[in-house]
Length: 194
Image: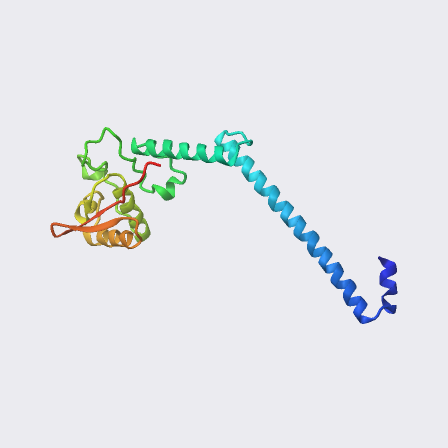
């Protein structure tokens, strides 16, 4: 290498440029191979961690993996229909800390309805939290709600603020809005079991 550098003074400009470009291509190719190898290693590490988390062998074929994931999805859907919800991030997904509805609840009874109004969840101050609280309230029961009914399921909720949150969820397609006998109502879409 040193000899090449010393002999550069005898090379013309075109030879120097060609040598430099060849060296850059070799370095770029080596870098791409190194980056691809590192990415592959990280993907393999991630795959191993996911298999370990599920307690599954790493030798599963794609078809076997898909079968297990479909079965797991059906199992989770059945658990949720019985009222067991496995929150991954409870502070975000369920900030009010309310439990999901259970099979023992009589049909049409909100899970937050209690004898004393003091046990109702407090209406959040921030609009984003209000929208999330309303979405969670609607998801607990498979029925339609008026803004007044949703407002009564919270402490200090104003009907107008609840209606704004309901309209926002409807605009995002997360709930369905409709008129029933001249009263605007909202309903969470039905979830499929699988």
